[in-house]
Image 1 (cartoon, rainbow, N blue to C red):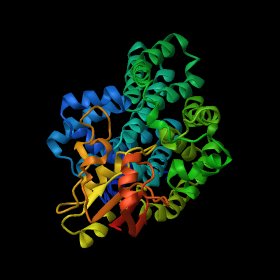
Image 2 (cartoon, one colour):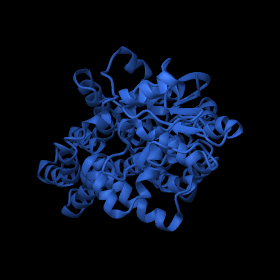
Image 3 (tube, rainbow, N blue to C red):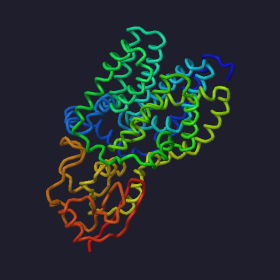
Image 4 (cartoon, rainbow, N blue to C red):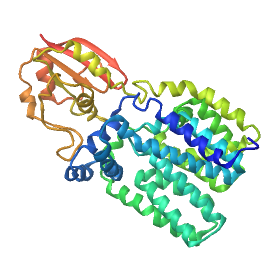
Length: 454
């Protein structure tokens, strides 16, 4: 990579990201969080604001932006994921710019290609959630910080503040962690960096304050333990072996600059430390570190970049295949049609758990999205999902509208021994007393039980 032309440095990584991100863009089914996005963007504006008032206020800027886009492009899987793909392509170009500043055209091309071929880049380029946009915002904020440190000026400080604000609007916690990482270098320029960082953090702080009473949305998160650290490369990079390689090289390349090192490592360390005391660690919350980690890795391997890029591509290939399978995002949503459609009989009904601790809305979303008519009717629902200010549908009291069907399909996002777990006592009693389990199916984040009258 000693002799590379500038157009190639910019074009090749962007094209690779676009090709890999577009490769089987709809291969993996929408999973629970993406189904929440699908449900939110289909709401009226009035109902979207009511939803934000009750849950998911931190995601409302993303939902609002995607709703505008969906009005033009539709709510198909490709349309919902397209903004994330575009964000990752742009993020690749910013990574190239960061790499060039660290080590010229060879480092820029190497960093851009490494970023493009990472499984995690494709994984979140194909996800209808705000993480790819947050990665783009973080990359832009880091580039703005580097430029500000190179030549302090009020205009550059304003650009930095804008990039920080955009990142915080995409994901408030990620945005605040990012600012903490920037402090490692920004403290050397307190009169410009500190006001810009404070101003840029205001949107994230405002969203966090508004979301203070919505902690139930993260009630599923566990405290950090030794297993968390062991799983970090896999969770952060969608491939343990690729993650280990990039993290190791990034540590070796941490001498490339304080700004890069702080942006790469401080958010991860802070969130892990906080996760020891309170359940807050989720690897995708620190995806904002990927651009800096990749640039550090490319700088460390600058004398062997072609070999490192080739090795990374070879090691990443199995993960690229996995994330494009129907269950590549962790939920085998499309299986619902393959199971129920062949066995469906008129008179069958569908029932869902109404008190699941984490993603209780997902079974109904999955049923509505991936099980076309004719299908067992959802007889207990009196209002649709997200129509009353919460994520879940409202059901008739005491399961009175269940009736006396011959068969009931219980659809869940797990497969406990008791298919009636997480259901109200009235529902449990009505179904448990009169029905027995006939057949069961279990897939990733999808459990289906057919119950027949005793």
